[in-house]
Image 1 (cartoon, one colour):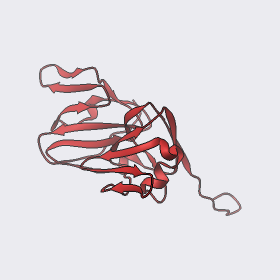
Image 2 (tube, rainbow, N blue to C red):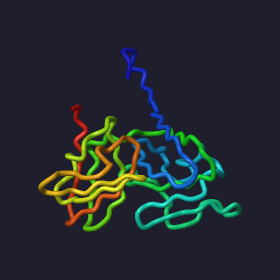
Image 3 (cartoon, rainbow, N blue to C red):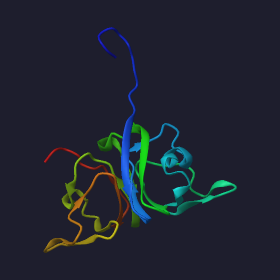
Image 4 (tube, helix red, strand yellow):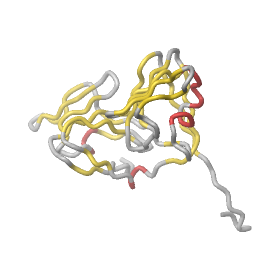
Length: 176
């Protein structure tokens, strides 16, 4: 609302550079109607499938998107398969990352990282002892800390978090 009491709604835009094949991403901006068609609209038929934790959908040339995955969540990570290199552009509402509560279960959880800045793995709770990103991973050793080639969580990325118990997590997005 401006000084003349005019109200406007501003959309946010998120851009993801995708390479050929499977890309592990997290979405901090989702369309107001967060179905697959709206979310992947900028990719057209270049997007061939999308896979979430325990759900997936594939693009059928006749039927459109088919499968158990129908809506996109800002809390979840996704594997998006494209047939050629592309830019995925999503316009909509931005998440307030510090307000999102992740309900993690024992075992592997596919989550998004939605903070605006990269953060070290020290923000991961002690119940989670491994993290896997696209082509990178680290495990937690109580004596040595995080070991591996994944050193920080990055905005717009998705991650597999392996947890030993059910827990709730909120990312600490405060500036370093």
